[in-house]
Each structure stands twice: as structure tokens, then as C-alpha cells.
Length: 327
Ligand code: ADP
Ligand code: TRP
Image (cartoon, rainbow, N blue to C red):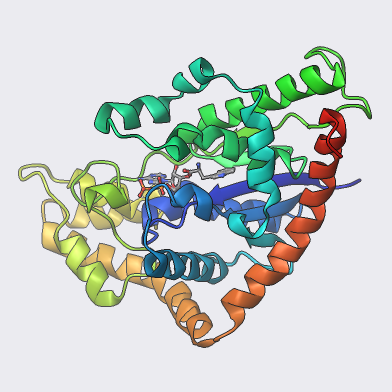
């Protein structure tokens, strides 16, 4: 039986943190290693361009994210790891979709509404974000898209856009089953909600934008500094923010004796947390340091990935061009 197709993307917009890992990247790894999927892991640099508008920063962030992917165990022998801008079919298909997607429909996107509320001078790329993401997904006949809950609506946009294209150009209605005339497969979101939101050192959601992260490849010193800054609510036996982060690294059963023996001793509990985070990060940090010494690994991974992705994407784009009559 052929494997199901899985695709997900991450924007190269900043240093990865343990919230990104437990919220998303760990699941990429588990799904890759399950052997049940042909996986595509994409560096969404053109999506990131809405934010990162400096060539040196962009280059550096793409390099860093590729190393992050490799260091956690995403494997170019098993998965196709590529960057969006290397496959021009993405932006080409996004244009085709632009002609069938309406503005009022895009205005309903949560991400657009949030961005608009904050910034009146919104760029077209932010408005059009879901259309490019639909192209990312649909080019590979993706079955499943593993994403955090915040991206669910974007996968729904991809489903709607696929259906609209199939109806407009192939005469396929929603209810009629897929036939060989259908251009785009309808993808399903795979919502990674078994991991609750990872809290940051201030108790809010861990996020690059809040400056409250523990970097995924932190040094021992960085881990110590971050853990010592975890906000504790004096008075309680168990410091909630310390415990919430600790639970990511040890089971509740493993933590019980420690937290009982050290009731109210925040320093001792933080010291234990530093040990446990470091024990987890050390091997991947060392692996990443090794990978970073290899001067060609990032370029090779991305160029091999681009070749494989292009091959698949070109076939689908051609099919779309036949459907619209421009081939
Ligand atoms: P950030 O909020 O730091 O900018 P991103 O928006 O780049 O993070 O998120 C990348 C991925 O990591 C997404 O799939 C997102 O759902 C997940 N993620 C980010 N922060 C957390 C968190 N604190 N807990 C769980 N998952 C998270
Ligand atoms: N929008 C996603 C995010 O912000 C990143 C992304 C871009 C993506 N293209 C994708 C995710 C395609 C899944 C599939 O996290």
C-alpha cells in the first residue's frame, strides 16, 4: 500500500524554542519515524518574508532552521526537506488560486483580522498568506497537514480552495468522489493538540514574540539563566510554572517524589529542572554543533530536497495548467 502524504511548514523567523519542539517539531519526528507517511518538511521562507526583510537575516535564519530540523532527527533519507522559494510552482499556483479566491473570503481569516487590528499598513503578502499556504499543501497531493490549532483555519482554506478549483475547472462537486478529472486532493488537518500550550518562563504562552523562551538548543548557561528567571508564585508548595515546564521532560510519576520532598523549595526544584532540561538538550545540541561544522550539509539537504519537491510539484502544476487551459 502506498504511504499517505504529509506536509508541514515552519517559517524561518527566529530561534526555535522548546514550545516549538513539544508543540510541533517532535510530532514531525514521530510521524516521520512511524514509517506511515511520505513526509515533506518545508521551510516557509516566502511566508517568513512578510516579517524578515533583510537578506543577511533571512539567509542566517534559513540556515539555522535547516540545522534545527536535522539536529532533532528529521532525516533527508526518509523525508523531503526543502525550502519554499526553491520550488517556483508554489508562487505560480498561488497566483492561479488568487483568481478564484475572493477578498471577502480572505478577510474572514483570523490571522488577517489580528494583523489588521495591530497594523493598518498591512502588506498584500499577509493578506494573501492562506492562498500561498494552500498552494504549498495542494501541490503535493497532501493527505495530512500536522499543525498547531492556530493553523487549523489555514488548512480549511486549502480545502475550500481545492474544492473551488475542482468545481470551477474540472466540474467536480463537493459530494462527487474523486475521479481522474480531479486536480487537487482535499487535505485533512492533523491537529497536534495532545500537547497543551507550553508556557514560557513568565507563565504566558512560550513565544518568540514574548521574549519568554527556553531555546531548543540552549547552552547550559542559557538554560540556567532561563530557569532561574521562571516566575514563581510565592506561597504555594509547587511552583506552577516550574512544574508545567518540568512535565515536558519527565512523567508526573517521576516528578512526584521530587516535588513532595522539595515542597516550597523553589531553588532545589529549579536546580532539578535545569538538570533535566540539560540532559534532554545536550545530545541534540552536540549533534547540532557537529552538523554546523559541516560546510555543505545545509546546502546539500536543501538542494536535494528542492530537486525531489520540484519533480512532484511540476507535475501537479502542469495538471492545473491543463485544467485552466494555458498549457
Ligand atoms: P512563536 O509563537 O514562538 O512565534 P511560531 O508561531 O513560529 O512560534 O510556531 C511554530 C510552531 O510551534 C507552530 O506549529 C506552533 O503551533 C508551535 N508552538 C509555538 N509556540 C508554542 C507553545 N508555546 N506551545 C505549543 N506549541 C507552540
Ligand atoms: N503558516 C504556518 C505557520 O505559521 C507555516 C506554513 C507555511 C505551513 N506553509 C505551510 C504549515 C504549509 C503547514 C503547511 O506555522
